[in-house]
Image 1 (spheres, helix red, strand yellow):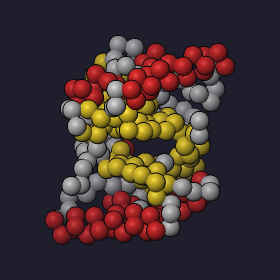
Image 2 (tube, chains in turn green, blue):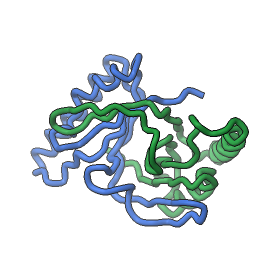
Image 3 (cartoon, chains in turn red, blue):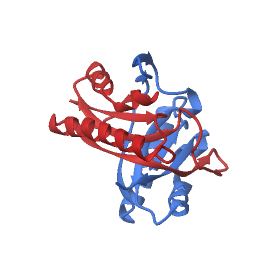
Image 4 (cartoon, chains in turn brown, blue):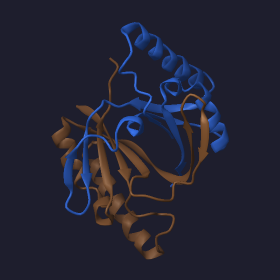
Length: 113
Length: 107
């Protein structure tokens, strides 16, 4: 088994969504995560707030967020177990983010040993 | 969450790469010793994107070059400023990389 990181980009903005829509989305996410957990594929993950900063380049310039705009903003991540990239992609396709026009970036974790 | 973007070491000699890895290990050790480090992973290049309602699969990580996510840390900090301060030791800075510092949402 390998570990894959799913970076969730775009989709529903939880900070600005209407209460009812937010509730529906949360339920869908919970169902998906519960299923992954039950199948022993879920390693962990977090949702991110829109607050943040970027530190950039040699001069370590700090650019303040928030990260409010754009479909590419990372809104959260999870780590999952899969035998290969194909399985990881099949798992990713179950993500509720696709109901909200989002993107899942699927990346294999580099193992040092 | 510290998201590392760019700062790739593809042009390095084996010696430089060794030295660069050493800097990363020293940084992790320091954060660990201070009780700030929670978790982290480096990511392999490549990967796939799954997008939109039709779940279209395309090649490659999101965006290219300087923007590609190469790895991440989860750290403890009392606020965003403290988390940004940790990045003074970020070894990718000398290769033009950047760190996106984001607050985790507690459920």
